[in-house]
Length: 201
Picture 1 (spheres, rainbow, N blue to C red):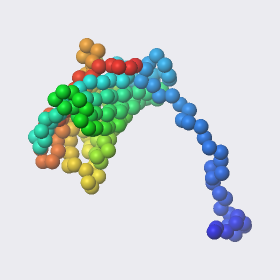
Picture 2 (cartoon, rainbow, N blue to C red):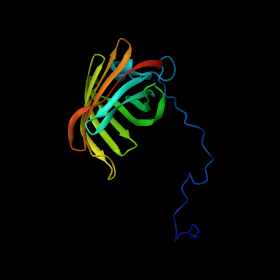
Picture 3 (cartoon, rainbow, N blue to C red):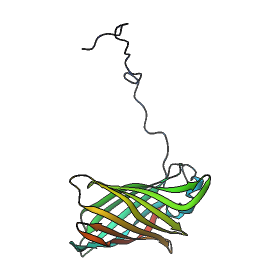
Picture 4 (cartoon, rainbow, N blue to C red):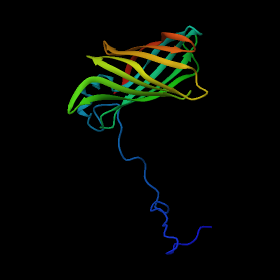
């Protein structure tokens, strides 16, 4: 048991120690531009990406067999100068039935500012639960975004991923992307591609 507060022991308990419980997080995040906070002006060029997208794609790599998957991507904002990116995917069988959960990923896309001027350059932080975090540097051209890894950080037990590249685009209202990966001794190779349609936002 610790000594009571005295001149010899001036430490006070922290002010939050016996504070009352707090309510739920009070600030809204939205994937729908019609509700919630106003989109930060620096994100105007990324506005077409905000929403919930769902579709299917194809995956593969030199060290694994090709596979079909479905995916849901949610891109949202809370009024600050970045987008929150969340992806959930699941494997499909030959009859398009769900087989098992697949990749999950979260991250943040942030436009690069030059003083008060918004540039076409982007920074993205992407993280997966298998122990890999990627820092991407990218550029937006119209509704197309091209990313390439500037750094990859891995836990001791993660797959040996060393680099990546991604191309996103809004084409006829759909979100299309292609992803390349360098891993386990293979150089940059096609890994994932998909077409997703907007289901909310």
